[in-house]
Length: 110
Image (cartoon, rainbow, N blue to C red; front, side, top):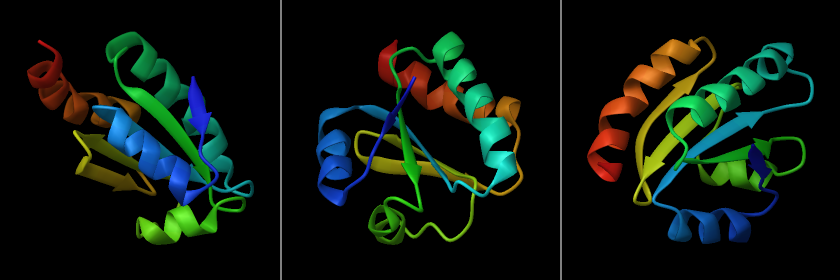
């Protein structure tokens, strides 16, 4: 479900190519991140099939996190047409994400 991004070049290429992106940032040490990630992936697959899911591990790609001002994990950034629509960090729910993605997704793909 999630495509792993390991470089700024890779991130920039996907940002230019995809009209709807969800980027999930985490670390190997974050237990909440490991529990939340499959739930977010499942929610995307069920509700937003045209949205591409990216995964950035801060341990493996710190420059991608730094370039996007990610200071805490888990962080989810949602982008439409290359522009950040919103971001959620630390404590958020899958239902909250679904509700916030729903309207712009409907406008873009209806």
